[in-house]
Image (cartoon, rainbow, N blue to C red; front, side, top):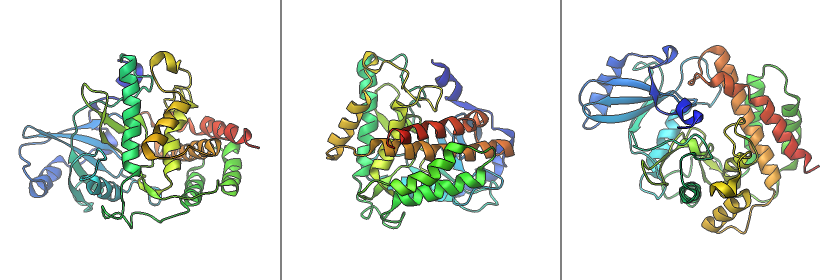
Length: 353
């Protein structure tokens, strides 16, 4: 098992700041989850979720609980009700999602809103180089991530009841504004590259607008892979899902080809052909083939935009780490990546100006 895999996989004892009354949860589940029985054994997933995520074992069954973190939160962040809604709506589609059981918005139960879903058995893959796999398996894993995203972007969001899940059009403009504001609210030490990006990005948005259902945080460690087969069986962490531009969503995944392993688990350092992992051009071509696109224009702008967006997210994690409300014990380390990520984003811009 790689260092990344051992660091982030599996569960741990519930962190002190994320504990709650298990008895109250047990009573709630008996009343609202069909078939629930037994006494709860509770643990917390190790990964880097902004919404604390728990494993519930009871009565021979396993469930997952996602909740808003405690404490003061950024406006519109940690919307577990939106996560629950989109996962539930996608249940009948080709998009791999867990089954949902219930949403609780009564903060009296465990202190914050939460929802409960199926525990999908499988693997979370944290290292994009996929150590221990054959070249054919690595190739199949990357293809499966593209297939799941293509399925999502082809969903008729009106037909599944998500026509009002977000605004149609001008997604990129709204995202730049949102994450600029979020960054300013979480700003600690000045990051000059972020200041330049906040000024440059909205003035240089590429032409052409589209709207599909998007995930918003689509990366390999937000997926469950089959226990033995190289395919996605569930997409997780839908906190940032909305109606938006599919190219913006897809190119978020492409950051990994430009970032190394120390920068948000990138794969730029790896010899991709030797590993059987598609190159940047091959992965883009595969997505385009699956979605019927002619290609991806303005790739450098989209990479800068997504690195800026992720830097703003990491700055928010840094603030929560400082306040002691972050979900993951690795939040401090993640927060420190905001500056180098912003600087990497500005390097993308410099290739255009």
